[in-house]
Amino acid sequence: MPDTYETPKRSNGPATPDDWLIYTGTRTPHDGIDRLPAPPPWRAFHGGEPLPRPAADTGNQHAAVSYRPGVEAIRQVNAALYLRRPLLVTGAPGTGKSSLAYAVAHELGLGKVLHWPITSRATLREGLYEYDPLTRLFAAERSRGTGSSGRHPQIDTDNDIGDYLRLGPLGTALLPYDRPRVLLVDEIDKSDIDLPNDLLTIFEKGSYDIVELARRANPSAKVMTADSTRDRVEIREGTVTCRAFPVVIMTSNGEREFPPAFLRRCVSLQMKQPADIEELTAIVREHLGGVLDGDDELPETTQQIIEHFFQRRGTGLLANDQLLNAIYMCHHAALHDRPESVMALADQVMPFLSGETAPGDDA
Image 1 (cartoon, rainbow, N blue to C red):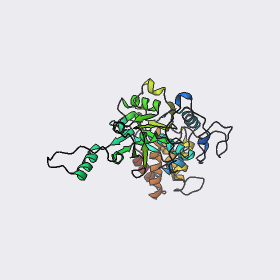
Image 2: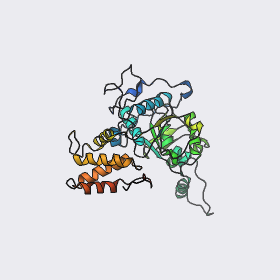
Image 3: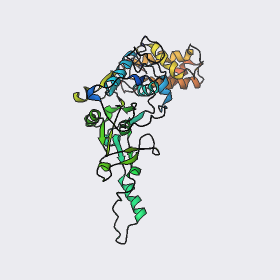
Image 4: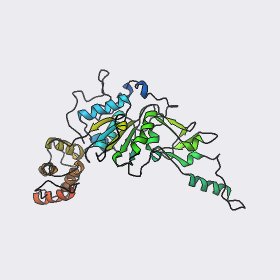
């Protein structure tokens, strides 16, 4: 959901050679990413043999086609594309921070969004890859037995270690694709205090080592990825290096500050709440136009809920998806002739997200 609904003054078609915008925000898929110039010398990466492009499905088609970016969002996405830098998107819940990643992947044909949801327990290692030595040991036991001594055998270093290695979202994004993948690092402000700094080295190098492979006499293997456990990619010399730096979109609810060293390596975008009822109406029409009565004019009850939401938002924290939930519920609850019941149900579906309201508010 947008920071503003003003859009660039340009056609709805693909970008033209004279237009610097690669991502246009039109939601019309095109090959504009192929016009992206070479990266700055300090952001050039030289991965191995290019991998095939992933399927065009972004993984969340509704978010991909319903999100309407504002001018600032479009400019900052393009800055991140040109500079090969991560985009740090900050804003209140429900302002469309995550949806931006799917919209970019959809328009630029970059395939499935690699989603890494962050918690306080998230580590850099899990974002890069997971190795399962216990399952590998059990497999060796089953194939060789424990022997007369009853002791566990050593793991067979010649077996297929790729069966026990799977790249995470970050690790998959750094594979040598000829077009960048889109990586959504969701709610990075919830991470352990060290994770942002841990990411700096990876973002600067555009590569990482898989220690379990590097230790082997033959440091190559076909491993699973975050995309699939069936399709494998070959890792050589125990190292993964990107060719095209991924489009990294990191979201934050603004619950913490990040170190300056981290911030200076990011392009920043502040998402704003819709400024007026017209913008809220546009959001509802994009998301629920096919569910409601379909005319240009929204049903009267829907418009009343939008106005009610806008008034309540001035007294406490509300998210735009709560408005969508309330309108959907009230539309199907057939309460159109009972406005008091409609608003009562709407209020139940969109409670304040913080425990505080403005003085004198009884909502």
